[in-house]
Image (cartoon, rainbow, N blue to C red; front, side, top):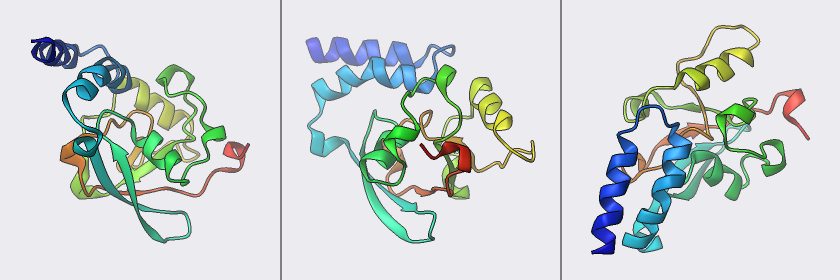
Length: 156
């Protein structure tokens, strides 16, 4: 009974349009962990590091892409301390492969603002996303992500 209540709550939270994807993931994380074993939540991704090497990484559904990338050593955790969009300065910017873009929710206004603010050219790459705003799901199994070279101001 408790599990079904948590699932209903999770469903209701995901319907609230004003919540950021990260906030939704925090709120629904407890229902995901209550109803699934960790092995059921594993999401395997392919990441291309700044040197062009393809690496297989593992994340958990309900967690952010940023967490998966930092746990696998592709983004320095010290360069991005907070996962809230209000504190973000685009150190976790990644490029998502074309075939996976449509499986992700569209960028929020705040995410676009942060990406444009930190783009030198002021022209936004359609593949650019903030890793702290992409919440992993089982639908993203196999997603290909490119981690760009850190900008000089991103290096701690």
